[in-house]
Length: 221
Image (cartoon, rainbow, N blue to C red):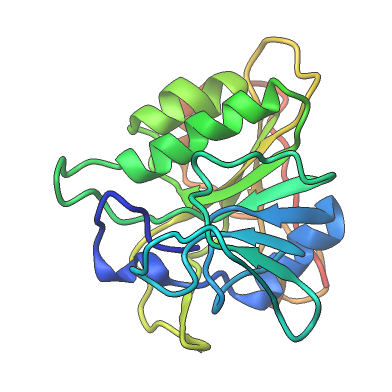
């Protein structure tokens, strides 16, 4: 995750916890993180300013572990990196419009590249009343997994205390043909190795769709 150029609150620079990313990476094998900086890049290839708030200069750097970071805007760049794409966009609302335009633009871009055959996995705020959920996630995603508890995102390697936002994992897979996405719950890996039923809010489900084939997907380590 990195700051969006529209100008967002300071907490847009929070990092996805490594244990959360690892479980998803083991499943999807990510090649690109187009919404990051040098401090919080996860995938082999990353796009974004080198540091939070810095301008894009188009240069590329090779990190000590061999990963590559290019200082370009991920919203305008090519996402065909030879594998799945991971995106944890800013959760904060735009100062200019007071809505979730940041997440919405990243999700719109995800739908564009989904239609070009790219698998995209987004870790976003679980707000079912937003335009990004109604117009993009609900219409184009193959899966939506509601995380069973709030994620303690990190700043400078330290988890933030008392997280305030619920999260969901939106999976865009090429080849989906119509219909609603599969709706499920997702246990954070720190819940333990034992698979158990994930908790999904009844209100959230009722706002999405009434279904008979509701299923639960629990992550394990």
